[in-house]
Amino acid sequence: MEKHFLKRLTKLVGAGLFGLALTGCASLTAPPDAARAPVSTLPPSAGPAQAIATASVASAAATTAAAVPVTEPASAPRQETEIRLKTDPVVGLQPQVDLWERIRRGFGMPDLDNALVRSRERWYASRPDYLLRMTERSRPYLFHIVQEIERRGMPTELALLPFIESAFNPQAVSSAKAAGMWQFMPATGKYFDLKQNLFRDDRRDVLESTRAALDYLQKLYDMFDDWHLALAAYNWGEGSVGRALARNKAQGLPLSYSHLRMPNETRDYVPKLQAVKNIVAQPQLFGAVLPDIHNHPYFRSVPIERDIDVALAARLAEVSLEDFKALNPSMSRPVILAAGTPQILLPWDNADVFMRNLKSHEGLRLSTWTAWVAPRTMKVEEAARAVGMEHEPLRTANGIPRGMLVKAGSTLVVHRRGSLDADVSEHLADHAQLALAPEIVLRRIRITARQGDTLSSLAARHGVSAANLASWNRLSPNSSLRKGQVLEVLLPSQARKANAPRKPAVARSAARKAAPPRKTR
Image 1 (spheres, rainbow, N blue to C red):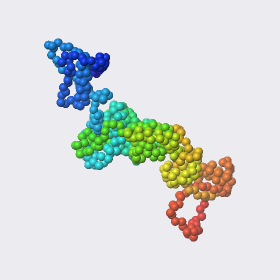
Image 2 (cartoon, rainbow, N blue to C red):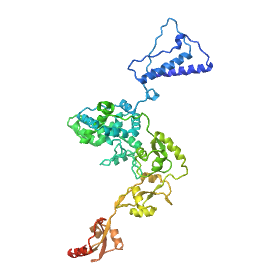
Image 3 (cartoon, rainbow, N blue to C red):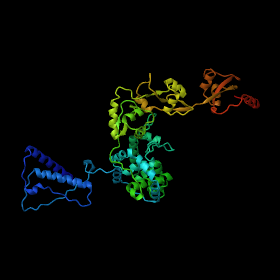
Image 4 (cartoon, rainbow, N blue to C red):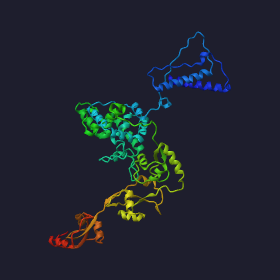
């Protein structure tokens, strides 16, 4: 009824203004009472949004009364009608609040109240510096997360979950290899379409990891119909929670989070979230200070159409490299590939700065790096010679430890020059991988064939392939062996430490004489 009344009232206002325009602003005579619009009086408890809504209706009514003459019988008493509209953020009647208040208004999970919650409250309250650092770290990401949660109709307690998972650190990696502020395991990330390749790891990406985390949490809630159980499954796995529920059901025990047998980490998981929720709800009770975070987007998405160096992108946006990487933490190489990363995130005001500065670079090369695929397994020094680079910069740019070989088919980031001067293809940007193998030092030994030995049997006896054994001895793979034939085999040995002193020649000679003769087969 209220919305219907407001719609009709809007039409009347439009008709009244239109009438004024037609009369060339001619004055209209109306009875004195008709010029006064009904004024609604609000109770003291009415909120600011309600006051705004009521004032808007009163203003509209005044305009209508001024435009259309109304005559009333002199004897008819005037009755003022109070009009209240429900606050509706869609039509902009709800006033702006800080982001913490917005989160409080969206709380929708049942509260957990037990000794574990009290313990976690004390833990956070006794570490105000840690709490402040953690909440400050959330500043770039929190608005987007809250926006996505509200869009899906989910409880805003979920916006606090990265405090528990990673302390809002998108570069966090657990001992179990979970990564990002939502802490996705590699397999779970792939299930929720998070790309993980040489150039990017979407488990760290602000937009993609948030999308995947909320998809996963909604899936778990649909499965268990209980947010506490859904959160336990997010930490422990849905299969584990399902089996714990089945055990309780078989034993006639309650099927709630508090009554399940679970690991200590999962037992503490929901109490930690509840403790953070309680502190956000009433920070003054815990002596906590929450930083002011405005209810406004922190970043904007900017399209990338050409490969560009990370350092240059930060410079064009006029932000520090640290701040740039904080908003784009999924990038693991010094170049942003347009084919694999079609957008970057920039602070709200710096997005326009970036676009303006980018125009001044039209026609200029934006990236000094490209991708190269190793044609065979090789040392870093060999790869560096093949692409015209020094081996140390190549090793550093690709994060290759010493003593490792680059396996065939691996993709390396290399300098753009000569024939290697093109943006990276979409296929390579999406599927590039770097595979390494330990650099093995081989030692040569001699073996003697016995009656009935073949290349295959000798190769199996010494843990090598028959093809390699044939190659080392310049034989065809089908060659037959005669009794007493001597063959050479290359076997891996421990590389001598660079700083280990060699034994003097005399000592080595004496050691060989003292050692019993070794028979090899």
